[in-house]
Length: 342
Image 1 (tube, one colour):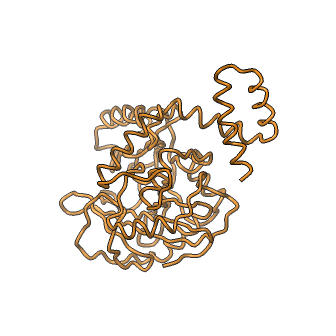
Image 2: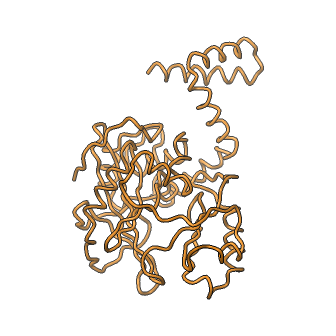
Image 3: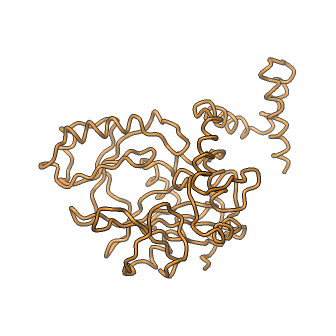
């Protein structure tokens, strides 16, 4: 509470600082010496705000959210899951985000905080730009190329000797140089990550997205979204509980598939892995690939759908939101694991 009061006073003093008032500048320097963590925190917030153009960014996010949910979000005192997710995406800048939120760093974060918990996909190379010669020199005929920052920039190469590498390189180089994350921030350190292709060559891999939401006692409520590619080429999903029982709602804009999907043999193990990998987060989405005999880590996502999401049941939007103990900084390395609840 004392730190919040200091921060509030400091923000007021910053306004004076902008007016070049020397006495206030001196006061700020004294406060920074008393609370050194504030300097880095505020510099990060101010830097991000300038780069993002926060006002226009906020308005655009809220506009898209309202269009999807058909109502105005309560951002001053959010109560639902979808409102809290929007607030997080707009306002919160977790200082740990670069460690777990980028594809290049996430495996190192994983092995540092949660060693020997789950397999990571073998990395073949990291590049600022790629060329056909680089791809031909990779030690595998099949692989996937990803942008470390943001989402939606994935290129699957099933056979590098029988595809148009010039076209692939041209497209991913262009897209990776323009990609932005959910905060609409373009990272100058973004790169292209080449990974081994898991599963059977030529077959799409289903992915399971574990929404892990914790309360004040670190009790973890998990909603599992399963995404699969249908025979018509469309990507559809369905939401399940921790027992692989279908839920009456989902946290996705994708259409729900009607087929009865068989429960993966390693599903219970995947639930426990997601539970342990989400320790310390008030909310995080853990993406896993569940194969026949192995489970692989996909990525961490604190800003599901860029913050623009809808829980298809208003009742469960409220239930999930009430359960979520929202924090300004989502990751706390000192937090306990807690237990999984229904």
